[in-house]
Image 1 (cartoon, rainbow, N blue to C red):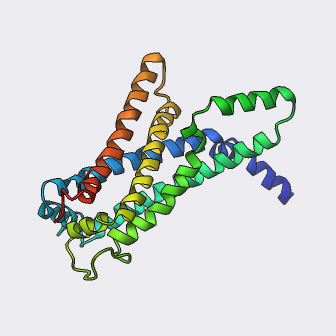
Image 2: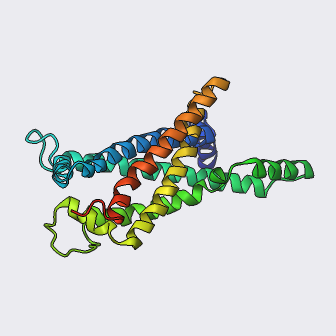
Image 3: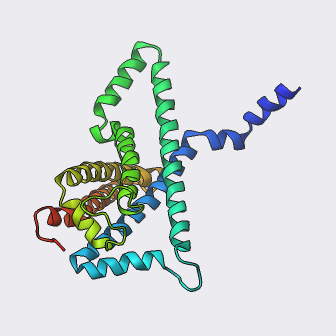
Length: 246
């Protein structure tokens, strides 16, 4: 009786809906768009270094003390980071589930017609689409490296004093060409991931309703991915070539 009850619970419409590909893709779309919004906000904050080191330091200080004295120091920032971390985890787990499900379905495909169709669909898919899981893994590995360097200061490049101003930590880091190369590769992966993910998210959410909407979504995906790559790499490039040095 217990077994029958378990089987019945597993086959309820609500349970099937939660476990369906549509639900997973919806979760990926929503969390992905939240992360894109965070990237753009983070990017505009980094660009304050183009104005002056003092402006960048003031921006970094404001993030840590946002909504004081109503909230304690770091409270808002900690909550914000938890939300972003949850979005990253949900996004990655859903992507992994879908990737495994697709691999299993392809492995169990039977018949010459299905194999030919699968092969043709694979060849027609873009390189970016077929490597989304790998670019996602690179991004997932890059995130802790970034946090250990600029947030927790466990990885120190060119300085030893924890009280070193925020803008100088950035300048000293990107004067190292090895760090610059790591960020270039990571931001390229992020930009490509955003390009395909932005388009796919709006398609999943039902915004693609015709040729015109498809063109608009694709154009927006290109614009956002370009902004992400160019915006994040502008300051490091200017530091690396010596335009910004303090």
